[in-house]
Image (cartoon, rainbow, N blue to C red):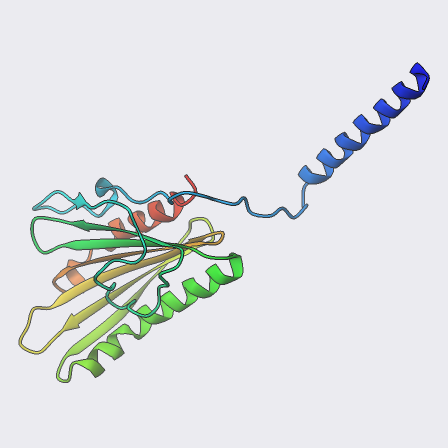
Length: 209
């Protein structure tokens, strides 16, 4: 083979590789989401709503669902693909984050929708399970982060027992869904909604770090 022929073939190959690279990075070209491995990033104690009476403490990030089911989400979160981390204070305030890496974006959309529906139905389910109790929920609106997040509040008042106030943040980034649940004794007036929205934003923003 002549030197000229070899040079022509080499130039053709280089041109083809360059064209392929341009096609892969051209604007508007659909690209698959990168495959993520390892444990997703979770909230740290300092990223939860401040507690005026106690610092926050965190457990380890662990695979699977927490041993105690997440209130309002007992049947909404799958074991497969899940990690969790529990948080607590020295008093009556606690929280948990559960993150689920699903099989794809469509599955993540469905899971986030199911989790939100479970929270919205929680007050009615609580009243049904506890005759004589009262329970209400509030929609605190969207949080603008990644593919979106939503924050809800649920207030429970069992008969002859303490009132409880719970906040839930449900968000998604690609095929990964995260849920943050916060709770303490109290009413809607005791809910740190503004700080919890920032906690939810941080939780979703950290998913791919």
